[in-house]
Length: 317
Image 1 (cartoon, one colour):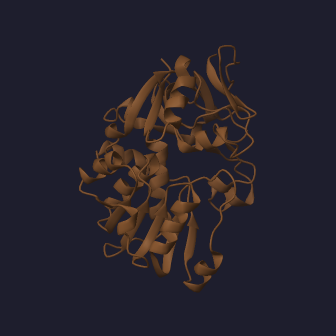
Image 2 (cartoon, one colour):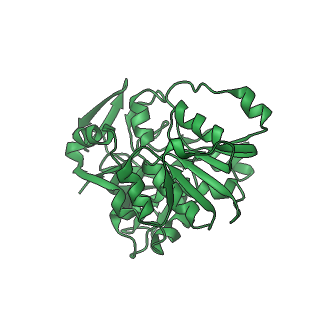
Image 3 (cartoon, helix red, strand yellow):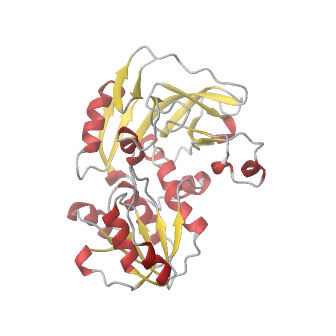
């Protein structure tokens, strides 16, 4: 089997990987398309000491599994939970104490010809959604998770810090609430994507401090976190939507004095993400920067690491 293998922060293309065998309750999925995200890039920088096939944003076709899924296009939730621990029992499987995470933690991922996941993790993809668009299901779900965690009102002033791949999706999903939204970024061409959708954008020097109810940091760097913090009014909410390689330095005293609520946010609702895609409420096509065959995966990663690049897709077929 062909795939991209990560070991000791070194990525290599392999042609002799063993094809994964589904365990009881799992399905075997032939991957059609997969997307490179910032978490994949952070893994290369040592965000987590992972060894194996990476990649977790995918769409594929089920070849082994429940009869109602065979030959169907699917996407999959990336956390494979045990079903018996405390967090599984209280309905929080994404925090399962024994979970594996597709392409991130103890579970070979999507940058290969095949993967396995629990059948219960899989969601059917409507014919109305293209294969390329379906690869965005996981990050769109992650963007929608903010609305699962934080009550958002139309009158709320919300600042999204970061105009990259995730920032673009978060801005589009937050815009669906009708809130008073603004996005701050450093790339005019990326901000232009959002402006074309009617989303207000700005540059950092134009942000008025202590004027937003909610700020979302999508940058993954200390400067972005600080921009988000300074933008918040007292008793505002700061949503952290990035993985960080290394430690984050912050002014904890300012958080205490202004009584800021800090919310960590990651995986989200796949069913809602698929509905948003099916209805055309999020436009992902302009976010696709480049597509490569799996055999050119190393080149695809070089492209994804270049400053200003949005989504890079790997085609397996």
